[in-house]
Length: 372
Ligand code: GLA
Image (cartoon, rainbow, N blue to C red):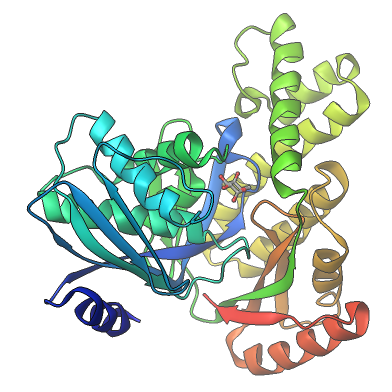
């Protein structure tokens, strides 16, 4: 893919570009916790977005999206969301936030390409944003700290694309390392890399369904979390986010919350605890313990947070009698996308065969599989 980006660049513009990249991600545990100031535990996948680029002497950006065979041109000051070339908004959004931060930027010729599956919940968007941020920093000699870079990516996505996502995806695209999980405290930005056991592999199974509902349901869940906090903080002003609510505190305030808000809050509160427990298990090598938490997380997302779907449930249920699969759960925002499975290394080939068969039997759909 890297040579591919370089080759296309030379074909389109001539010259020998620099190639920058950022990975997609899968979240092991800690779902819908990032925007509640909570904890997450993602890991990068071995699929990337590549940006091949060279600076220009004027303020023009010429961008070619090789996977869509589309071009876009704009100037540093002329960024404007383009509904016909939605991919270009990621590049434009990055240019806009960097300019707003006071950086003076040169124009550039760029090729964007990659192999992160689109719309699968593996964060191709954050990968484009971070690869672009790296390219523009490289070409302009900007030295931004990786955490700051992650937040600029989030800002571009929130403000220019108009998606109200949290920080997890950009964080792991910037600071993740292959073969290691990245624990992030989304309030303090403290983070640490944790080695994963070579005895097990992270296997991602794509339902191949993508729900339209995703955006509105995501925003609705966020609003419900805000509602929980506003009710609880009336009695307990120290509560600024669901992160501040312990399981005991939730019990204390339980009766003051409307039924659906109780469920949403219970997911977030228990999920935060599961991430902390998962980190402990990963550090002590208790892979079974980690796997059990993944199944618990799925139940909680399915019944309390209400963001799973038939296809995701079918994939998780299909692993229940496989002893070599220690854990499985939906990953990402939900309503389609992928499951993440922790599978004994020697069982991976068999697992892939079986899960595809069972998914087809249950849904008449074909699943796709990737290794992290
Ligand atoms: C999406 C968002 C993330 C996070 C997850 C749910 O992937 O982009 O910020 O909120 O959903 O955990």
